[in-house]
Image (tube, rainbow, N blue to C red; front, side, top):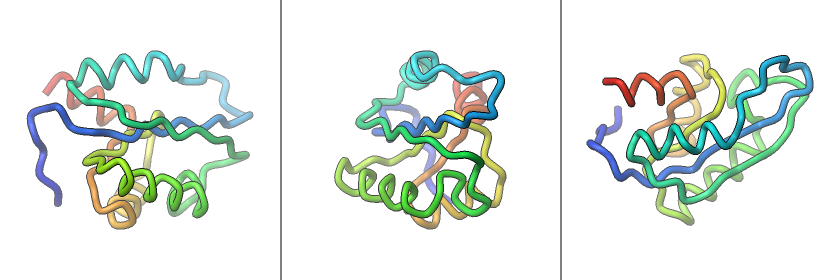
Amino acid sequence: MFERPEGGERAILVHLDFPAEADREQLQEFQELTVSAGVEPVAIVRGSRSAPHPRYFAGTGKAEEIRDQVKARRAELVLFNHALSPVQERNLEALFQCRVLDRTGLILDIFA
C-alpha cells in the first residue's frame, strides 16, 4: 500500500498507558528501537486508556490528534509501542495516509 524506503523516515511515536498491562513496554527502549531502524522520531504522542479501542487502538480523539501531527510534521510513518491487529493497522493507515507499524513490525523491520 505504501512504499517502504530504506531509512531516514520521519515518524510519530505513539505510547499509551493501560492500567491492566503487567509487562509495560518502556518508552525509552522504544525510542532506541526506532533509532536502530534508521527512523527519525519527530514527535511522541502519549496517552492513557482503560482498554484498546477496537477500530483505532488509541481511540477516535487520540487517532485524530496523531493524524494532525502526521500532517503538521510531514511524517511518513507512525509507530505504535503496542501490538496492533491487522484491522487496526489498516484503519490507521487509511486515517493517517501513511505507513503504520506496531512494535513487532518495527523489530521485524530492523532485522529484515
